[in-house]
Length: 156
Image (cartoon, rainbow, N blue to C red; front, side, top):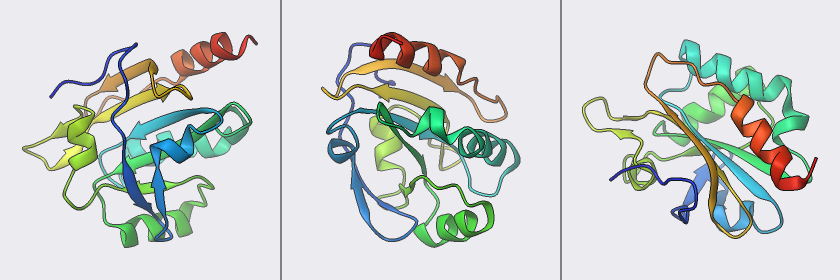
């Protein structure tokens, strides 16, 4: 399955966050856009750096216009330990079981490695993908395109 393109309806999901609460895409985009950030592994170098970038500039990623979630195939308890260490302050969602099912639906699951690649999708309140970026493991993503597209959407 290929990644949804701009203009496509984003696949729905319901996943458990690092605290055991189920979070759905419908809830995330109920009143604002949702930025869905897939990453390979908790505690890994590039993934930690990318999520620290979101954490350290959280007001641009989590505000009245957008909700941000990060998704990996790690188990919930690993995500909780990672969040306890890093204090991310945004939901880390576990796509652990069925393993990688949501990442597959977004076309960003690496079957050989058993992990999500670096897929990033901005989904508007109607459920339509407004911006996307997919990078392979080892390639750090650039969030500048997300910021530019969100500014266009909100007329900023």
